[in-house]
Image (cartoon, rainbow, N blue to C red):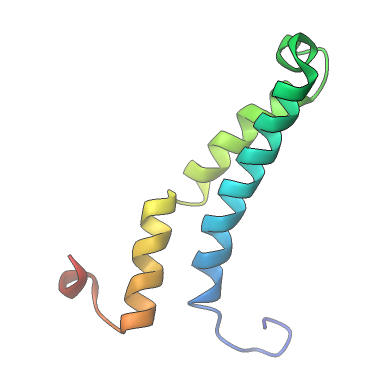
Length: 82
């Protein structure tokens, strides 16, 4: 979309919300699968699991992204949505 200079005001928050969930789920599953090694800090899995949690905060929480999506879909302002 960016290459074609099309606005992505709806797709961007959807992708951010989904990416945060997927990354966190995968990282935590990997840590659990490896057991104590995954939590040890020797491997990068422990770091990735921590980083995946902070990704949600940096990109805006999933709830905020969902509010943005709802505003775009329903074409409402912030005041009208709350």
